[in-house]
Length: 116
Image (cartoon, rainbow, N blue to C red):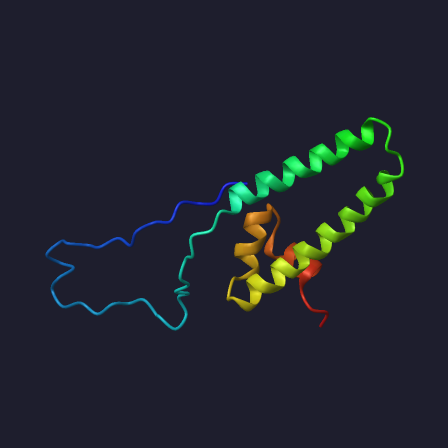
């Protein structure tokens, strides 16, 4: 999954913009999260390569490792839950999280949100 490019803020240099008009953005409601440079794409690619190699190993006759591989599925679900919890505590909305996962905000909140 690729991440959207970081956009630079638009600066209106027209005469109307410099006429002393008040900024209408409510900064208390607009998230201003700093973006840290991370290598998520490379790290995710590495994890995929490891998982595929493990599957090839099992496919060549290591049947005992099949159980361990299914345990990885539960670990991945737990890790996704922790990631979502962390993103929520960092200030991301359910809509932002859901859009990255290809689901609605309601579906994301129902799956990973706290029970009411």
